[in-house]
Length: 444
Image 1 (cartoon, rainbow, N blue to C red):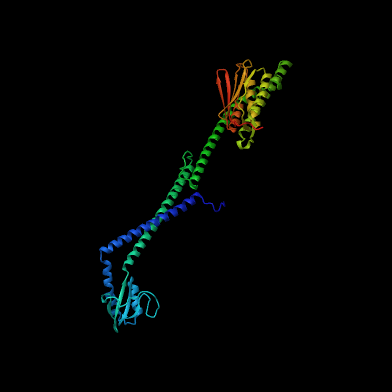
Image 2: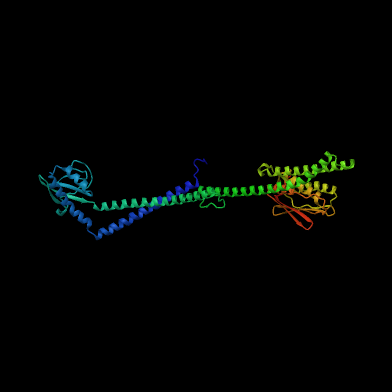
């Protein structure tokens, strides 16, 4: 269908309102017309006001003829009186000969209209009118009742038109009132009160506009909250990183000062200081790499990631096998349980691998090799639920974690519309991942 010809819902409602108002007004007009005619007919039978007007017509005609000194030939003047009097026709006769009528018929015109014959009707139906030059007989027809019928019609049209305007204005007023409400609420939002909800009313373009404004308001609130959380997280991260970098950096500067000013006792002490400096430099490099990875992930929007569909069981088996082998090389025992339910998962593989790299890297650093690392995943209600559990080692010389890797994992899983949580019970530490999946049969 041509978009130019397609009617919007608001236009359609207006057209329906006009049609409905017209039909209602026409119905009101017919009702008023019928009721008015019935009342007029009833009043005519009980009152003589029309008969009185008929009785007054002939004296008024005679007074006009006498006052104007009209002769029988002044038919134009007589016709003028009929036009002014309205609702009256008269026929003039002289010696029982038809002369002319004021409705346009004269003896010279050929027509089939009934003309009163003075030989047929009684004398009481004719009257004598005295002109300046002679006398004549006149027969008068009266239509005074049409004056009241016309009045009823005019009043019916006026009242029906007013009713039509009132109905249309009622509909327009509802819409303009709603527009006023939207304008007021938008000004409230402009004032900074984003928690104020926009009123939704009806099902047309105005309600669609209100819904869009409401969604925009909610999105803006979420964006502000997200930016605030990111600001707080970044502030906490910078504070933690400053502390974590200061410690090895201070030690590195101290070792380099000892080497620079030759404050060591022998070559063995020098080698030790050089080794420690190297270790601190690598520690600083590791922290800076983690920081770079964190900001890379947090500056990547979800729309920038290209998601692909994978066979879930095949992918999980491959990732777990790779990292299980690394853990076993570090002396860990790994026990894991695959899921028997086939599924497909949409993800950005590079980002998802980074999650596994961070998690299993933390296990190699902070987990106790004497306790097994358990890995299990299952499918429940179109969700992949994965649990990784290990026991934390208690040696005092281990480096304290900055938590950058876990924050990076949280951001990546959020970009995949999932959740990641961490729980600790005593020395047992667990990671729980929840991702949406498709439980349909995997594609070949």
